[in-house]
Image 1 (cartoon, one colour):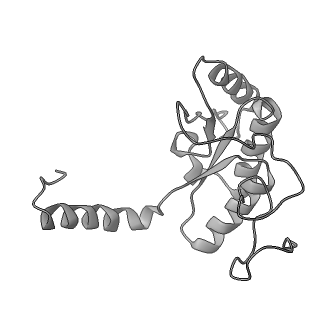
Image 2 (cartoon, one colour):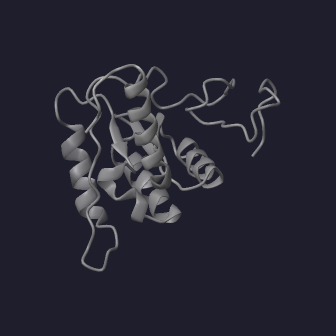
Length: 164
């Protein structure tokens, strides 16, 4: 991956797709003015009985969801698409199908879920290169209990009610 000339040296590796507004780009993203606000549903990912992605049903679901009045973007590779069960190649295929089906008319937010930062960065670079307008980065599953504990301790320290 080549680094744009104006990118800071601390960004390694540099994103060069539509997500990376901190880099000057020659290529204009599909939705350059996208702001993540409004109604942004997470699409489901249908599977066949053999657990392969049902692309025909997925394309139909994408079109149906994107056609709903008021939807400002679509989220893919989120929890609703069983992202934790999808391989890297399946996540790439989900994004490719999504961009092919609705990417020209609807901004796409791509989920990033991984247990390690190197894999999360690889997924984020793939989503960026694939045309996603934004990323939705998830806390690794292993860190979720720590996040809940931290939240509870913070609430207790400030005298707020427990989450339970």
